[in-house]
Image 1: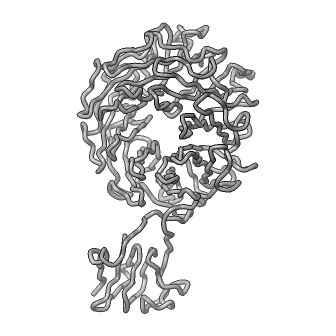
Image 2 (image 1 turned 90 degrees about the vertical axis):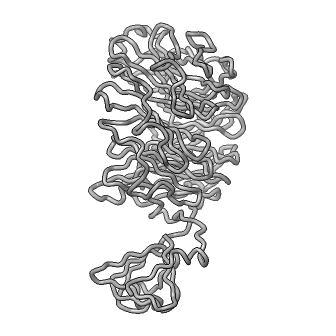
Image 3 (image 1 turned 30 degrees about the vertical axis):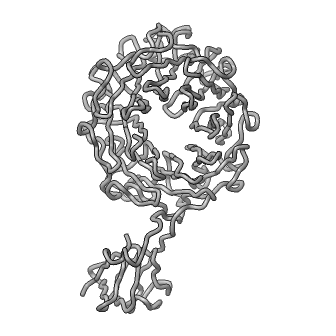
Length: 554
């Protein structure tokens, strides 16, 4: 006989405790389609696993789920779940868990026009089934207006709220929002409710749930800028005195604070740079958030900032600032600081991750619930001296610590560090290696996985099939060790007995975690197990003696 697999019987004799690979030169492949796969968003599945959203070739949207044990849930690496493959580009992808093992995902969609985007959304079930309209539920129908940059939060009743910026390409940019129930039906007026109606322009997709079926929106506002009402000026120039405002909207789509929004920061200079990951709920119906701040800025001869700082603020559910007027400084060191990511500190406060230029080092700062800065003045470097880093993200580990994943610039390694509640390094001075292939790695994301662990994912060009980029992941345990069992490659060296060392290159018989390639005639004379098996049909053959088993576990 050619080969005998005991795939059903093996369940009685062999239990796979993990499918994660703990070799930083191997990791776990999430997606490898014929096109380039670029990770865009990573969220928790609520059960210790993670859901990965990615663009294929910067156009179509796909997704894959991996369990806490490291087992792919939604097809294989070459056939993940299709979220949207409509014509033209789909971009600005954001996602949140649905609370039942699935996800809500929204994006800017240009299927109707190359210049004017529309907002689409989809609900993916825990089993990877798109539950709403094929290629997404359409939220906006403005056609000639550019709707872009969605943000998401749960509505608390099984549905979702999406917010976005709307540019009519004539004289106005505003923030709008829509609520969608669990059946995918829009609950508010067609094309959404306007978040703020004050004179001027505003942009921002930062929203969080208010805990009462509504949401809080944080946005950049031009009303106090010298040219803040001049659309033509703003279309070609950045604000010089943009401020931060906020608005709360209830579950019926009504503004709860003033129609003009509440002023959060009106300090001199420009405040802004909002992304969807710069705010978190405070646990009591309010919000904590970080923002870039130019009140101390000095512009160079080209008008570019040279001294941008970082601030944070907390609002209660009535829109009242809880910390210092115009915010608490996270860092006002020399040079430019820019937000990378924020996370809860696990105790009612916020941790801000930011990059400092020109030193190209990632820093972090913790602000506790009372608005007091907890770590060193201007933050602590999360990497070792000389270990320049970029593309970093953070997550709370659920045990009072923060895990940071980042690319180390010189060696191009993907590394991780855990910071204790006092800002101390818990994984050594230089952190731990997640991926050390030296390939081009980017788009790093990280989520908590329970018990102090985390899952990191990223885009990676290591396979280099037609220069393709793929998506990889690894799970880091609370000790800083990669979860799983290592995979070792075994190749036959000659015809012979499977259990004879002379049959194998290197003189070692395959183990249960082996990836095996058979190029010769091999006979199994005692029960054997491997993780995967490839038989090259031109020269290879595997014969299993009667009554014996060759068990392939993957």
